[in-house]
Length: 196
Image (tube, rainbow, N blue to C red):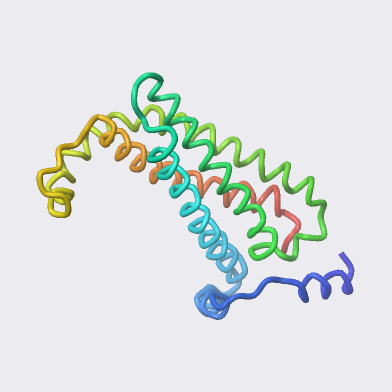
């Protein structure tokens, strides 16, 4: 990339109110400050994606596909997949524009294909994990959280569906954390490997 392309990309880089705080934190890491800045931005984009993902899962389970028989596990997998895809689209756009603006000189198609491949691997692992873990996590957590739930809803008696929803969200939270680390490392060293 020549100097005029670099200047053009810098001019259209997205700035927001978080940038000064991110730069202040990242500057404490010396020679690794740029990587720390990228990781913080990646984590913020991921947190926004997690809100999109969890909100989509919650709304779909509430309104469209509640985790009840028949095909309860399939419904959980479908809802989880739709939420994941909504977050991936948002994350790709924001990472390309904000986290890695200096990588926009590369083909968007190639980056999207690489980003999608990495996220597909993360999705497979996450979906398998959620599908396996939601039932036992719900059964484990509901008795623990029931007294707190009953503070807000006295007399509440959890159903199998409520237990499955709680388990889905708990498994989702663990899956999101693991996939975020995988996504950052894989995207940094493959999708966005051209940034310094």
